[in-house]
Length: 387
Image (cartoon, rainbow, N blue to C red; front, side, top):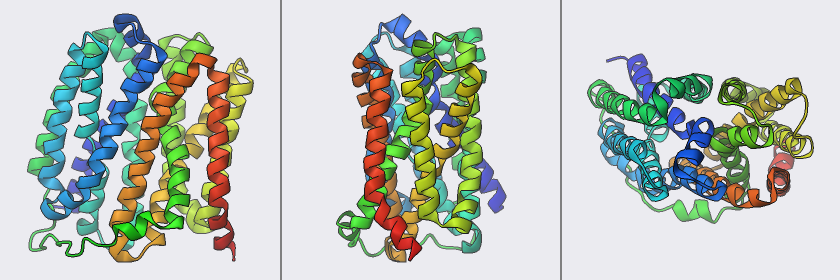
């Protein structure tokens, strides 16, 4: 078995993770119409993917260390397949929410399981580049959940998308179980001996400065990409499904380039400075949408491209966590930062739905304000890196 094969098989699962997390941005009008959802219900239901995803991160690290990704990852994916079927058959908000929550559980190991596998299949000198490429290519799942999904749901309906999607999840889970080994032949799976040290991370001021920014930037980026970025276009701009799909396609394509370039720019210009600049660019996009929602279409495309590109730089928070703690703690530090990011998606996706009672302008300005507060807390790390 080759490392390339492991990479490609796991990439299929990560592609599906991105696809299913982003579907509601395109199908939200159908969910409102067929089930009578309010904005608050739509936000809460969509955010449950991220809540369950985040909660599974807490025991996931230990499970991956003990059993490896080969069986942990596909076992969770089977729960995701059940979630897709529940979602497809839902006739109520509660059932829809259950399906969405199970989908979050199903893909909880899509990134961390791969990172665990890559640490054993690839040399350390290639780990960062392989991981960055994996995230960039996997993010193309969000592209599939834009214009292609808008077209597909017109052909087979949103319920059909999830019914067939459940079958695809099962097939890919089988591919992971049968086609991925935890480590190269003859290489034992390393065992984690020490469980102490997590408290060092959670008591660290550096951790909270990085985590707060990931909470608002990383969490908000996914909240926008996977729901509110489409809903904004439907409600504030009155666009149709294919037009919305095209703008989300542009957003997600820009995000792929952001993932690809973020590491290179961070290496050349300094990670904290690059993350700061990207966060300011994303905040600018929010304020433009809040203050000028009826901007010309060409400028709207530029704003979505800006937000997609700069929002993807949130991935640098994981790299900064790896660099900020001793080697023995980096796995737990990265998982903890990832946990905060997905709790951010849950709370911001739900919270924006509640605040939308006062309109998109208010919601976007409040979000921009939270980002600026997080950046104020992050500034000492930028200054420290400049010394």
